[in-house]
Image (cartoon, rainbow, N blue to C red; front, side):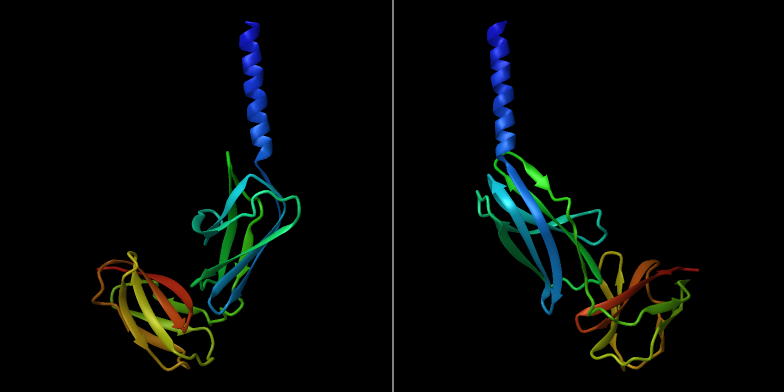
Length: 205
C-alpha cells in the first residue's frame, strides 16, 4: 500500500514538473498590411521547452486554420522577437492567433491580432434585385474612378462564371443572369488586389 502510494506521488510530481517546464509568456502580438499581404510580429518574455509557433488565420475570429510556422529560440529567460509574413492576403479584416508547440503540450494564445487593411477603400456595391432570374442591376456607392476594375461572378463552389472589365467611373450596370443555374452567387467588384463583394440568388421562376 505504501509502495503504491509512493509510486503515485512520484508520478504526480513528475507530471507536475514536466508541465511546469513547458511554458511561454507572450507579451505582444500585432500585424500590419503591406503590398504583399500581412506582416505579423510577436514578443515573448520567457520560453521553456518551446519548439515552434504555429500561425493561425481566421476570417471570422471563430474558425482558425494554420498558415505557417516559425521555430522558437528554445530556452530563454529574456525577451525574444519573432516575425512572420502571410503573403497574398488581401482582406478588409483578418484575425490571427498563435499556437505554441512545446515538448509535452500545446497552448493557444489568448491574444488575437486583428489586422484591418486600410488600403481596402473600394466603394461598396449594391444589387437589385437580390433574388431574380433575368437581370441584376449593380450600383457603385460612389462615382470615384477605379483602375483595372473588373466585375466577377462566382458560384458557391468558387468557380468563376463571369468576368468583364469596365470603365472605372461607372455608377450603374446591368448584368444578365438568365443563363445561370439556380443557386447562390457572389458578385465581386475588383480593383487590382482589392475587392468588394455582395451576394444574390438566381431562381428559375
